Image 1 (cartoon, chains in turn blue, cyan):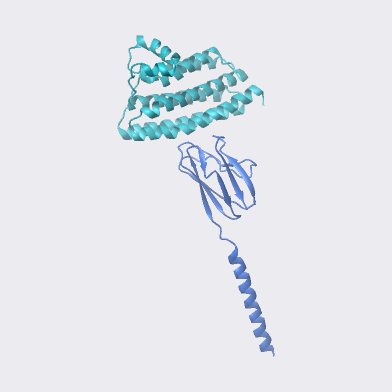
Image 2 (cartoon, each protein chain N blue to C red):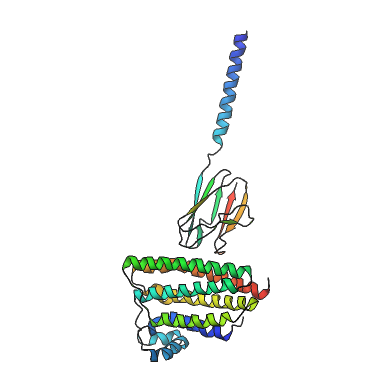
Length: 112
Length: 206
């Protein structure tokens, strides 16, 4: 009797584990996105990412730039030529950002 | 916005010198003033009707580019010291940083190509105009300085942008020099837009 119950419990646990595992599989693995700072623009200027994704800004110009959120929630600080900055987007929302040295450089990151 | 007369004079000189550098680059000094004035005043069609001017060579273009960058970097150094508002001081720092970086690239390219930037009448006129502007700016202080400096920066960057489009980029023969000038253009355009924004904010007092 105990043996049969144990087998039932084990089977139930196995099913539960499979369900949990498959549920976690449907959640997308974090991705990495690149935004180029080139010709005094952000390329792409608009980017949609998922929470947990990483965004890498790479400065391909020969003048320094920044990627600075308008709401001040994140800021790369000065990025010299050929340097980069990584940021993991966690909180959903729409973030407008710009370069403090060249305010005509504008971009948007949408986290959803 | 009215511009102080010295700025009108010096910036007109900058613009005329850069935009019409081909007209004066190879002329004896005595003929330059008349040519520059005539070229600045002549409608485009009339200018086109005149004999084809000698174009500046790559060594001269490199020299003009380095001179123009150095001038604005020097103006930035002055503005960092004498400027009043944070926006003006921050802008001045960007001018120092960016124009210094551009010149590093220009010098590196000239070295790589084995080209010695060649002094020319346009560069000399730019330097003379810059000296006049600097001397005048030095006599100002506070909000007057900020206003005069930003007026100058708007006009100067517009003149450089026009010169890049009309002369420097199209006349550059070496592909790498042309590419460098083309890459510099967006920075000059961004400086101009930022300068206009600050100029406007100073005028409105915001």
